[in-house]
Image 1 (cartoon, rainbow, N blue to C red):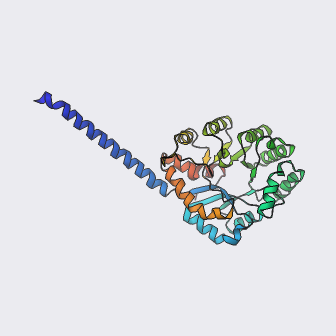
Image 2 (cartoon, rainbow, N blue to C red):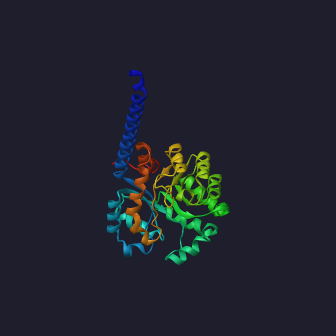
Image 3 (cartoon, one colour):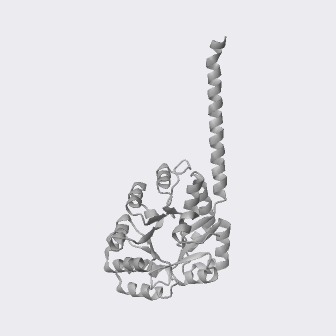
Length: 295
């Protein structure tokens, strides 16, 4: 009788083991999600552009960031007046970056200037004059792709940033990033949108090649069709846990209305990661790279 009952006992034990494992995994996942829901975020891509103050005055901006759980942000604006306005009122909340679009006063002129700023000799003088204030800690976010980053002006900007210990916040493809590092090998680059449309495999190659490249994740959909973290991005986050930061990108005024939802969405996929890695992407990497004091 004992022998004939052993298979059923083993099956019952196996079922119990599988049930225990599923319960454990569910508990771990639920714990991860609960932790992620409370994660503070550092936003690596915020703009306060020319028309934003009319719709979102500074107090409303801070209210949105508070509700989103965003404790700090890289801030740049077109024109740079918006950056000064927010930073002057809330210096502990923002890290100011200098945008090189010197002529911009509205969306139309900004679009036109983006097509030529990287070859304009006046750009260098404008940046040098603005940096004399000691106000800015980085240059960007700016747009340059491919050989647009190979001009004498761009070489001078990269070397100026390297010399002054500033980073470049570059909305660029991989070719342009390679040009920047060729100009100034010890430069730090914040790669806006992790290359925007650059495939994860190419992001991997770039991060492996350039140790001083940090990938910012605004406008990157890292979630697969099943609503979980895409396996390709999960592999990247596990492989380079110190190289990614969260970002939202309020490049147009209506985008401010999405900041809270974007933060909630990010916490959902951050909950799929180990706690220590989720914390690094959410705020830890930014705090380290931008030398933000612990609260």
